[in-house]
Length: 365
Image (cartoon, rainbow, N blue to C red):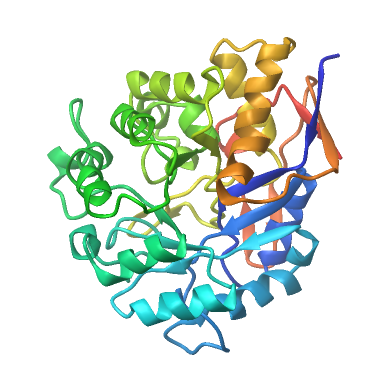
């Protein structure tokens, strides 16, 4: 039986939400060999302050980190909570966060572009701003949900364009021109245009990639309306999946790394549409291994193992300046199980169950 002995890894884009189910989400991450996380700030209310208890309109990084720790997140070696960029974000707030050590990253959301993103400010307002200049000067990472907002349906997703492709064509070059020293993570990239931008942008720009965008295309979502696969940015076309697969498996690549965007929802189908986000707690390394094999990588070879470890375990900590772990975990090629998560707030159906996907790898901690 093939097994991969790997250092514990960092999920550099995940969602723990808020409320009594947080402990179950955190436990599932720890059970899949996760040493640390970036817990995204699109909570209710948003994490848009640095310190203090927060209020009904905004929580602070300090407050939300304590919530995560009390729910079991104190077992993580590293916990990063980005600052949600809103109309109230100021250069002095960035200075406060940098001086305190609490601020490691900021998160850009396109207005109304994804779950709890109504507090976002258009990218056109940020380019050249004093806030982004302070991010450059303090070496704070800018995490970007890279989609253009407010587009008509035919421009939002088509065979020749998408909200993501348009954002990377029109805004990202302008952003780099105005802020050449900004450290950027292009979150959950899905398109060939985003991949090409990252590859051409230099070592200060990197990207996270989710399991679902490596495994699936739009056809898998539409065929039978498999709403457990519905996430934002939405899965794209075969040429986009191919670009992602080639990028993450490329020899010696250092710019692409694991960020699952795992997003728990007790109800995917709602009265006003479908909740965006795939839940992969407990099974992300297995899905990544399956995606690498689907890309033609021989994980039994030294080259294949090296490519997989770079993506899952090495590149992300290197970009963020995090320590690698001495603790390790095993991925074994053997049938694995993905279980429905029963929480106080309801049932969370993980992506493999929602897609009737049999896991071909299992984890041993």
